[in-house]
Amino acid sequence: MKELRWNPLLRTYTIVAANRQNRPNLPKGWCPFCPSSGQVPENFTVHKHDNDFPCMSQDPMGTMAVSDPFFKAMQSYGKCEVILYSPEHDITFPELSVAHIEELVRLWKERFEELRQDDNIKYIFPFENRGEAVGVTIHHPHGQLYAYPFVPLKLKTELDSCKDFHTEHGHCLFCEMNTAEQKAKVRIITENDSFVSYLPYFTDYPFGAFIVSKQHLGNFAEFEEKHIHDLAVILKNLTGAFDCIYDKPFPYMMCIHQTPVNTVEYADSDTYFHFHIEFYPPLRSETAIKYYASSEMGAWAAANTMAVEESVQIIRKALEKFMN
Image 1 (cartoon, helix red, strand yellow):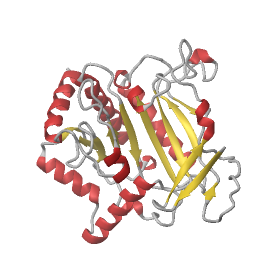
Image 2 (cartoon, one colour; image 1 turned 90 degrees about the vertical axis):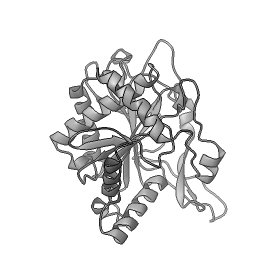
Image 3 (cartoon, helix red, strand yellow; image 1 turned 30 degrees about the vertical axis):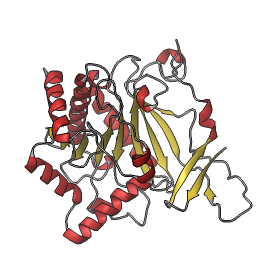
Image 4 (cartoon, helix red, strand yellow; image 1 turned 120 degrees about the vertical axis):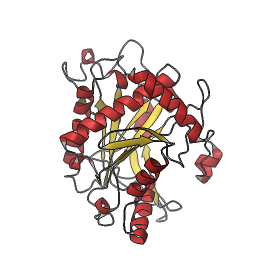
């Protein structure tokens, strides 16, 4: 059974997807994403694979009947895709060449441009869960993409904050944030012509880096080849730095935020919202996890266990190690 159930307290939807209980969990001796599995092409660089256990689909089933009209639901319309980064099972993201990562960025752009043609889709969200610490069930290098029939609450909150800031100040909140971080310098990790990566002043994870476009880009459709190349470079370097912090694969959640599609409410979001990537790495030390516990989950009152002015020094040294 799959449906979207309305939460009137938060004014957003909860995705119910009972079918995902049956998805594989770290299978031994077999990988559905390797070419030898017969589930994906024999030859590919990067590849879009429709999720075998989707929580949304473009051919959704109906909703469960309820006796009281207080309870509201809608069909789980949308799309869930797996984005394979490589045919090689054991390769890591920073081990990919820049040219290879450029192909990945082009695939993200291609999927955005295709999925936004569906008027029922309102938000396109590429992401990656890396490592068992964040719930990975298959180790083959891959990310995912969800296309929602609504704008998810966190994105809606960011969009509304940016819209209010633009109304009050007449310019973009992300441009202001970039300028402030570049002026302060203390939290910058790395940058190139098109993107800057830093640990934001307010981030809630010790290594919770952002990658933010310097130009006023809203989504992948606005990327030119220069942007594709520069994003590939900064992604390789940042993920490489992560792996050099403790000299082992570094778990993280990577979340790509861009402008919504097919919405009246945010039709003008390209004027006040910026393409950016948010990383949520759960390690606070080599062996300890920074859990999102009761305060964070129950009250949305985040607590960072390190001052980012300290943790940025660790990741800068790790970046030097990776690049040398």
